[in-house]
Length: 377
Image (cartoon, rainbow, N blue to C red; front, side, top):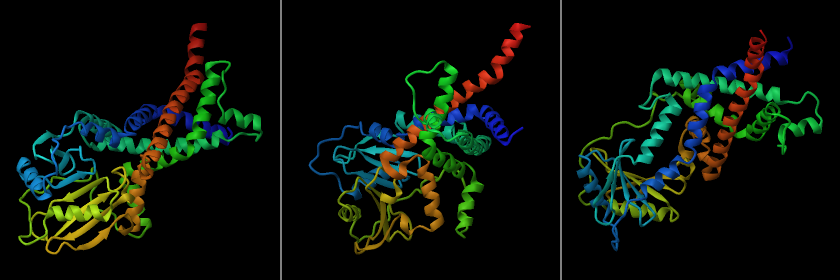
């Protein structure tokens, strides 16, 4: 048996064996393409009052804490005057307030947000309720197999004879094909060609995200110690009253300083100061889509004098952490904004077509001959 045949049959068997998981990853991946934008749109449906000026951040913070039993950890201000104020408690706790009156407009995730959360659970852990060790292991191994399918597929895609006629059939669509088998064979190769680069990054980053050992390897390569813990970031929000300096500048001044630092801001996230050591307040200015870490700057501002003590961003993180962040957001394309998300979504959709055509071709090669023999007997 030639080396090419070994690669072919390995590709076929691995693809069929993991087809259901890969199709699930592709379908949920496509659904999550514009998750951030759709969720934000769904959360923009709250009607706010037409006040002349919003309430001070200090007052809004007290209202948010009162409504959440002291659990609110941050306030998210939007540059849209018609948008509600978002108070967050940890990762999932959400409270929407009218920034002009302080009235509670909604609490918890919207139906849209809850839907995307379940889709993400399926995508990451094969679960609708949250992280599971077995589901995460299956996803991790499937991503490894997907990586093998990509590499073996590249080898099988290469024409045996480099002539334009043979190459053209693997990169350009035809108006019609003689039969379904010829169409599926052509589409399997054509979609693979046009989606190759983004799909490779999506698959490889999926391996990094789903397998802690591979993620830790990034830190080892950079000579850094991997961070402790795994799973979904974020935890229970700290409870307690605000730690506001008696003679300080106030939270509204700090928000205004952040807005002045970057006039083109879209969102400002004010971390509420609580407990001891809260003499300085952190506030993040976001000029991107909300998930472009390179377009986020965090200001540390003194409560006492109002001066900016520190400005930090992606470039201030360690090399390994920067790399790990890049791998996380290249998986969804969000590192390059809306354009990157669109490319990633189209590449994921292409992988779904490739999975279908691959299964169809496998059925014709493996199952149809058996059925013909049975009928003949």
